[in-house]
Length: 368
Ligand code: SF4
Image (tube, rainbow, N blue to C red; front, side):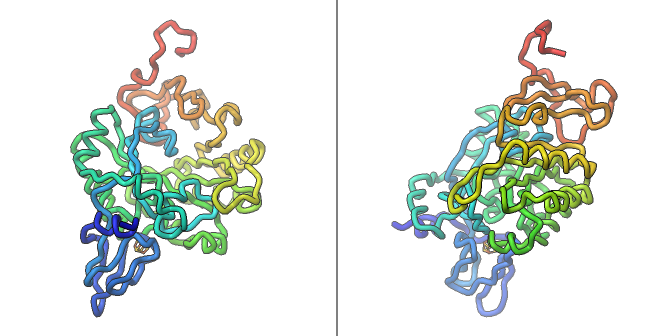
């Protein structure tokens, strides 16, 4: 059985669909808003029209594991917690530097057929039970683009919420208002890749800039906790002008939004560009702070960017979280989410049990 045949069996009628004339449907799960005729597939190849009904992914994962939430990356959403992370197959964009192309480009790339061995039928209850069993505090939809499997995510997230787990998306943000409204009751954290401010570059990646900017604003307006990531690709989006534009946009939405500027390494089809240097990351950090952003973090370079991996109070600059890569070495934010020194509220969602993040014994010199 081909991968497409296997995936087509793991579907059910979708909620994010609008019936049109002559058994055509419009998909509302992402900003492509595909108009799909009977028997055809959307741009992602994953959602398809069967007899006038939009069929959407359901009842499987291609990967399921517990990761530190910092790996998503979320630095201000239950820092130090574990996130049960599930991935599916497919994407609505086609980024030349995708590090997950084997799964994200399933059905669109030769060679991705091999992922049929990754498929595992599973119920949403089993996923949540797994998270609870392993002590996860968060469920994350990641590894491929979660927007295109939003009905399945909503079912998992609804059950996760009842079990006391919080829910996050690790997304490219190429969303519609309809999908964000649909997810809003069950989605608390939204990490968005803001890849570039150049419209032509977004088109090269298979998307458009405006819906990503609109989705960041709208998710923030809905009250989701938003963090933004920009992979700094030398020669693609690393000019000071473009970084200033990105930082300025984030600041216009909210200076509370953390901006992660992460290091590129050649992968997939983009092998002609060099790795990002520590100096390039630090330049982006400087630009972010210059625009008034309260929290800017360099990433993908553990230990290579000095103290900038840490979280300092934006008011008094005291060290609140000491990090090394995904590991938290020291944590001082109060149970109420405040700086213990000046009492400033630190933007984000924080544990009510900060002591659980400091396994070092009292009296250890690292405990402040
Ligand atoms: S998720 Fe996006 S790309 Fe896929 S069918 Fe729907 S609108 Fe099209």
